[in-house]
Length: 457
Ligand code: GDP
Ligand code: MG
Image (cartoon, rainbow, N blue to C red):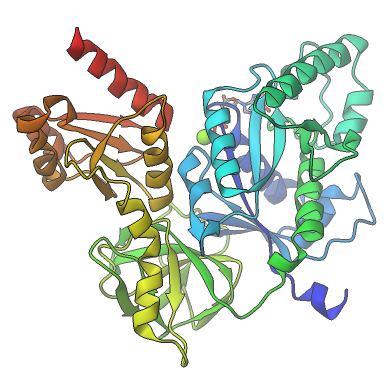
């Protein structure tokens, strides 16, 4: 590999799609088989992500293409299947992920959240590959574990192949109706214009080698510039949480550059820019599930791409889904504080000036933005009077109750992918504030619409 190729960073990938299409299963399968069956293991569980070293991917795709030239050091997969909002995280104004896997159930075709995911991908201009999952559900499918899809397909009966082709054609038409050209990746002559489809099974692994190889080859080929490591820090806050013994911490994905213990950082906060110093850079012990409690590894410095937990003072009001900046020797702190708050300001400007509207609460700035976008659209058209990020507390209910006097139907909290504390619920019941919860934008708005329609009758 040339000097330049050696300097590429790992591409970052996220998984999206409708509920029950197999997002979790797919990730588990990719992770699990590695551990059980591959000699070249080395997969590491990170904060909010899983890292697959390139040796591992090479090993698993050798039956498909033994001499594939893979130039990136690995693949970082964001571990948040189910949380579509995560695909919408920002990193310096663009999507956090270099590429997404959009999972579609071959038996169901495009579903509501598939289309929602597509809208997010279009909005962020993110590349994606379609995993046409559950091929093993085709009637009469013969299992060939971990086998490249063309090879597995050749060994199926005519009936299976026919059913596959009928369903595939139907799904390609459905994509077409969404304004997108798609094609089986091995028949795709127009990559770039036409999106790739990889048939997969998350149960028996057919097509998984194809998916892995395509992700790596496509990103290293078309995103060469983007993947060329530079020292510029690019870092996104995934989650803000309290960690035992560490106070409020932020889980971040470091997309580019190096973070050091002691770096001065600037983070977007609910009450303005937060300037603080990195006290510790933490990662889980290798191969330990993140959710497992335990001690962390401490690092003096960490290089991209990685998932990291940062401890520092004053992070209580940090906002997930925004960029983290490091203050360098030549940087103007005031300018950085300005830029870090820019994302927030653009979202704030969406709030209805009349002061009448529903309250909206979301897990990240990106997901909040997506929800606001949808609420503003002609088909929905719901005004918003207040926004907040993170769990809904009593104070949020208090704020929402203000609307009881003005427009009763707007004394409502739309909680998108966030928890509502029991105290907040109790207070809402007492005051007559309605709270709607969902982890999909569509369902959330549907519930609210049904409520409004009911009130009118
Ligand atoms: P998610 O909601 O998208 O994360 O979907 P899950 O990964 O939880 O999968 C939903 C259901 O579909 C589970 O019962 C899985 O076992 C099943 N499933 C997922 N992938 C496959 C597949 O490739 N083949 C079959 N037969 N079942 C699958
Ligand atoms: Mg899931």
